Image (cartoon, rainbow, N blue to C red):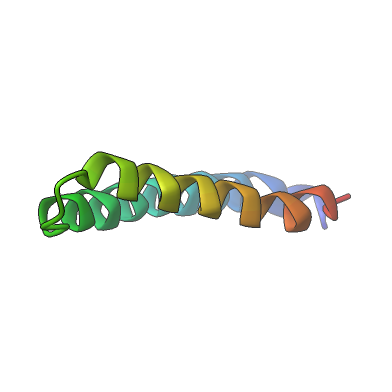
Length: 63
C-alpha cells in the first residue's frame, strides 16, 4: 500500500466496521423481537455464540 493511501484505507475500514456492527446489532435485535419462543434470549445467545466461533478461524488466518 502506498504511503499516501493509508489515511483513506484507515477511514474506510473504520466506517465499514461501524456499519457492520450496527447492521449485526439490528439483525439480532429484529430476531430477538420476532423469536416468538418461550426463551428468545437463549436462542439469540446461541446464534451470537455460533457467529463468534465461526468468525474465529478466518480471524486467525489474518496476517
